[in-house]
Amino acid sequence: MNTELFGVFGGRETFTRFRSTDEFDDVLVGPTTTVGIRDSGLGTPGWSATYEGDDGICVIWGEVYVPGDESNAARWFLEAYEREGTDALSDLNGSYLAVLDTGDEAFAATDPIRSRECFYTDDPGTRVFGTDSSSVATTIQEPTFRRDAILEFLHLGVTLGEKTSVEQLSRLPIDSYLTPSSVEHLERFVYDTQEFDYAESLANRLQRAIDRRSVLPGRKGLLLSAGYDSRTLLSRLPEIEHCYTVGDSTAQEVAGARRLATQYGADHTAFEPDERYLYADEEKVRYSQGIKESLHIHHAGYTDEIDVDTMYHGLLCDTFYRGHFTAQVDFEVLGKRIPFERLDPDPDPIDVLLSRFGYSPSASVELAERTSFDVDPESFVRQAVRTEFESVLDRSDSIQNALNCCGITNQPSIPFHTQLADNFFAPFLAADTELLEWHLTAPPAQRTTDTFLEACEMIDEEMLNHRPPDRPHGVTLFNEMERFVRRKTPFLDSFESPWPDRERHFNRYDFDQRLIPELEHVHDLPARHKLRLNDFLGWVDGWADGADQPRTWLDRNSSVA
Image 1: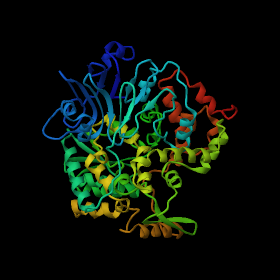
Image 2: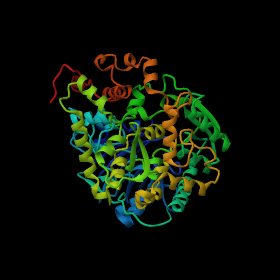
Image 3: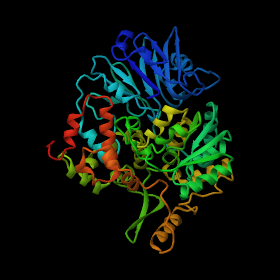
Image 4: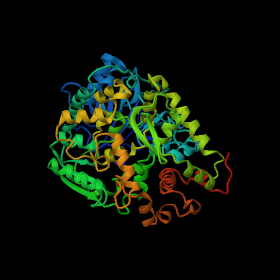
């Protein structure tokens, strides 16, 4: 990866057992911790920072903003920690991993939603941690692969909780910090619903959050869809020069995005969905970290053609402001479930979460028949999701909020941001602490598209001049009814998917033979599941000397309990 944080709870000699200091832009040695950071943006306001003083050391990797006028976030945090202890973490804003060592205390802490992963292992005899799972995994002498974690990845597209595919490798939970001998939980991400003016508060917080991120340098770009989320940034940041959309130049999504770019005076480029769209090479697979599918990194193949320094995106805005994981009432019309924007008073949390994750019952059965895992996929995934759902109940004040917390904790699409932040200054709007507070205090019934759009019009009354092509009406029910009528009526064009046809492109470019030629027995599986197989095997091959055990599990002629 282009950027990385790697550390040990130990001295420089312990650090150099695993890594050369020449690999990093800066290496700081504290009383009990040594940490290296590699980031071309190191020292840029709003981005990675280091500080070494009489009171200890501090390294912050990623996007970070602090109160006041302090230009060095690491120095601010070290001084604030001396006054406030871990409460000072609540004043760090952004998408980051922070490492601090004062002699009396040493820890590594994630942002509240774990938008930047921290992997760790005790296998070498000292606790090693870092942001690149492959780099941390290489310190494990005899790695053992974890069957249940691999099954979760293959069936759901995400490994749940704190697990990884390797028994000796773990990752920090949401809202927590790592010490030399423990993992400690914080209370920055806990639901506490309140009454206030939800739309006005959201509008004000969005504006401040976007303004905070305007300080990042250079030419500015935006990954733009025709939907609602990314246009919020476009309307507020006239500095955005260029917008990018993946899709055929004649596609409805691309046409809608082009209209938005024109409305706000930005240039627009549509990346044709050729082989680069799905091709998952070693570089792209590494961003999956072995725990989440690389499918969501739609833009990865086109990175070299993106001529900006700072790249904005609207990832997870639908999750935090529009209730992506909230259970809503739906009803059946001619075999089709039509959502109705009203909370389900008695949802089945497991059914809801499985529908939001990348789970396909029929494809999972097919996968089970072609591999050697001796499990019933339906029973397995339901129990795995149930266990994870129950683990977040103490952070939630209702079933609906527990659904959201579980979905956020295990968000499958984070590699989208991981890849961007490895190549650009990539601010993460949804990770803003003011907006997270809005999500935690607004009740589920108010975290809706209607509330979000009301806030958008408060920010810019012309923001909704162009509706998304698949949502021409302001009422969800009307949009679903038109979608149904168009699909069933001859001579009426159906709404197009916002994304290119995955199966068609996978087959067109012969990815069976290019990615997994040795797994001929799985070539009849859906493209998404074959890409997961490639992701997992590619990640293992990137750091381990062979992957005999998991490859045996993928052979239907073997037997695995």
